[in-house]
Length: 392
Image (tube, rainbow, N blue to C red; front, side):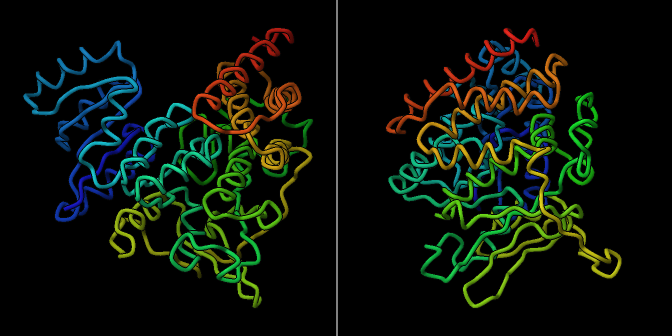
């Protein structure tokens, strides 16, 4: 019986993970659950899954959580804040699902890696910001990382032994597929007045609002390029992006002999989660079989890197190295939050990120403290820029 901690349990990935886990009560039990601020949803999940530990990220809500757990007569212990998340990540779980969105998930992800867990990683930002530190933590802890982003999980499945040295197994390149988001095919002029609700209306995936906006700008694919560099040791020139609106081919690996392996499946996160939870075994996920005859033609096209400038900004940050990816991520989080709040135009998201990268030269990544400082400074710069432009 494997014990699982789900960090970010009330989000879409957390819900999918809990669905898969509930299908296999003989294999998995819930050790810990966490949420950001949604006490009611977290308490309801505790009633259903009865974890030993429940963590609310906002420490001001811990007493409310504790009261709800007691009212439900649950043995679940309440904790909160950074220390609570570290305890959930490094506690008695065998498997940690890192699904906290944004930079907020970095500390607990590193804690799970240092503790030698099987780390099921959905948090792009932890790799983008702190790729070298995460790899060091995994080596020190002796754990294993299985990505659960659909694209990186697909690459993992198409490589021998998951994460080999690419040159040793004859990999020529990695190809990440992108749905193109809700605005595929539109011009910059057509995007000038789009709303947050329009940006969050993804045609294939059900996701949180921040990652939905990242999909609409193609920043999510840019972050995945940086992530692929660290997860698989791929050089920037070994990573390509192709738009595939059906979201059936989740990514591909091209080999030196001309073979290209692809992982296909219906667009449902439960496939990647079931794979990662049971790897190297295969278990039922609840996802329907892929009907290729009904699907018909599959379409592929090059991304529009002029209209969707965030993709090239990510390649720029990867080339700069050091703290540049953390700066990119921080500026993006600030700009996306402003757009969702209605105080920044959609096209200005890329402008805020580019300005912040221009203003902050990359520094070496030699400690978590250096990354946190770069993250904070980049956020402050992005906020100042938006205030100067009277955006927010």
